[in-house]
Length: 319
Image 1 (cartoon, helix red, strand yellow):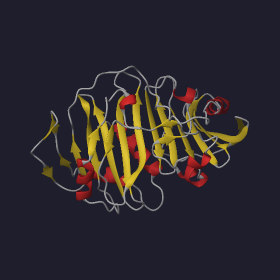
Image 2: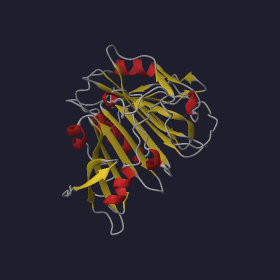
Image 3: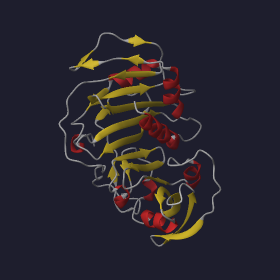
Image 4: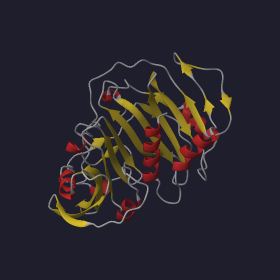
């Protein structure tokens, strides 16, 4: 699995770990210790050899060749769902819906990661036209506690926010110096009463960054979806967060993650496309301090995993 994807998953989990429980160690500790249960599927048949080392992770790889579909990095429109402009109370409440449309932010991106649930809505994008991240939440303190992901340095820098106008509302911008030509800029504003947003982007100046922020639309919604279902969950648990990374190529699906929890415990199901296989490698990560799920819980979720639709045709993925 690539370092870039690992870093993005870690950032996503940190951003979505509310309360006293942090799901990030589930993956991190599992990888550091290298403790895994591996099951391979070939031709739809479960392999007989299973190596059990610990309850850290359950991996397997079904094999079905997808048919490439047209380019596209946009998550599907959430038909019938309201945007944050009319339903601010729904922001971050639904793991399957993002109550905004990033519009021009993601134009020209090669990869876009969409995340919803656990109180946060998030889109990250990478590409030659620029990279950035937009966060949306109803909790201002939560927003301010989430670390940036595009930082040019791990060193904390002194902020000097300046007031700006974004879509007729007052916001602030500040920068982290990067190069003489371009800095990493942050824009923080309240696009709708009760909803706070933060944009991280490389821009020439604060006005440029504020202009980008003003292009985000809040009158429509998009759907977070992955090409698989979890038909079996531990008792009292539900899917709390969805994340999917799409590519601007014929192979549109790059990675999908569902976080399962019950308010106290976390379990992460991750499907990642690899350079050498069309079918994603799937892992169920149940290791981590205080997460509370057992190997048996992980096997229950693993056995309930079902691939749905063509990997590269989002219209076939679950609603």
